[in-house]
Amino acid sequence: MSIPLTSARWTHVALPCDDVDKTIEFYTSMIPLTVVARFRVDDGETVWLANDPRFQTPFVLVLVSFDEDKGHEQGLLKPFAHIGIEVPSRADVDAFAELARTAGYLHWEPRQMPDPIGYICALRDPDGNVVEIAYGQRVFDTVSAQLAQS
Image (cartoon, rainbow, N blue to C red; front, side, top):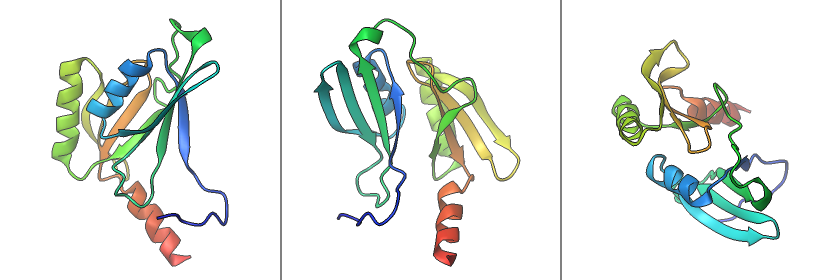
């Protein structure tokens, strides 16, 4: 289903990465994203990852690996800048943390933060970028409710 573009629309965040395959593995095994497109351009490779395609409001994480930057640190989102992922339960936060801890990707241990932050942990991708996993933050619900009122 295509939603007509009638005004500017938030669509993606693009992050450089050193090893595309290693970074894809992180985002598809540690975070519930799937590869929706992968293509080669003149000077590198681009991959589009998104949440489950059943969602009506897709948001895409674009990974870009430039040939000239191979072997150099690429991370941009650190130590606090991050990508936020909302999950349905505290147990999900704990499960993400355990999976990341075991794989060596845990950045922040799970912790309860004051409202509206909620219960969170964070993972660190292969390039050092931070991904926050949150329960109770209600970002999507809050924005949806505000849009419904306008």
